[in-house]
Image (cartoon, rainbow, N blue to C red):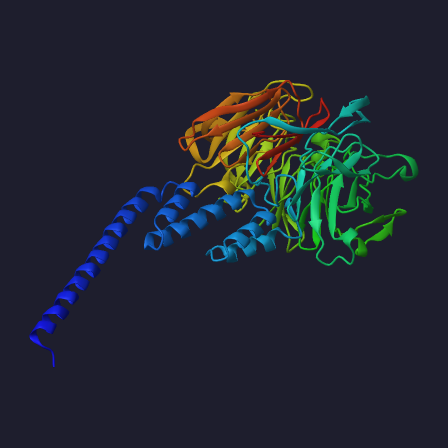
Length: 568
């Protein structure tokens, strides 16, 4: 039985315990309150160092747990910018409890093996992707000599240096390593180490290589040599044992540089048997418009090839002429198809030098759409995110100015023109104006609510940037010099020198190569443009590409491939 005195002692001791517990709870509450207030201040800092310091100073708090999650996300985001298998593996090793582990494993899976990240001219079958990240400067990281070669043109033999139109590099990722595939004027297509410009192998054609190749990954290949195929065109190269043939389109093993097949570009009413365009691949079938004016569907797999004309050639599925008798009367032999076809909605769209933009129906295997312009056209048509085509118009065989058409191929030909933007008529070298290269769009890099721009380089020496979704309210004369069309809002116009190269847009930056140099522009959300950097007095006909904060492009005067970016 408790005495009165013992009860008082127990009550006294219990009271002190309550006071101590209450003090601890109050202390923790104050501490948690302070840490919560501090976390609110630093959580938007985007600084891994600041957030790490907070975690060290505030252990065992709920805010420390939130800070840990935030830090892991920031680290993962920074690794994603590097985007290599090695860095993701480090993340998994050092942060095994992070919520991003599943995403890191998925990234490793995507990066392992081989990926053609820039597999064709203008990046994809829609001709509207130009790379992942663009640098803010044009520092020279390395150069590599691409050589020179002789070829007959314009009535005499010329020495051609480096690479020319279209001449865009292709980019391949093998695990965490990056490689370039480049066709050159020294007759060779080359595999190049993107780290240092070292040529790993080269394969020789019979003539200079002007165009851009296409890389096809053969999922049914029975050996490594046939797993990844480079399909590359060249000038006609009628010589030696193949006299009378023009084996100006070939399949080459990406891994070894060995020849897989040759395609003879047969004689037609067109004066050319060269191949400047890039093929598109749809599953196991490839399509290309050859300069002989024949749109050709074929099987790029060597195992299905056959002996024709005394050489091993790919199996042909279809051949469609991209001209008619009226075109022969209007253009003579200039029926040359130099563009790279664009794929959309079960159709392939081909811009032809005979003056037509054709829509080839993949189901019926026939042309069922034909927008006639009448001029020579060489540029490839990018697909916009509102499912239209931007078509370059050269000033040849037409009364009006050259420029750019925006066409809606879902509509009948007579209603298909959305707008026309004319450029200046000015003679330069072999051209009288308009646009020879291709238009670039930013649709792959922005949100729907952002401004959708199109950029193009003209023979008149200017780079133009327009809002391809908004009209100015004015009307302009079209290529025929008679028909009036709406025209888009002009956002920016800058003299950069005459060009037949095609500009690229990556994020909010534009890279423009001309006969006067290479120019790097940037714009803000209000479409205010500024020149970030330039390299003058180097001539370019080839088109550039961006990958991993590097720009790759070959000059037609110095003969060098340039790797440009931020040195420090």
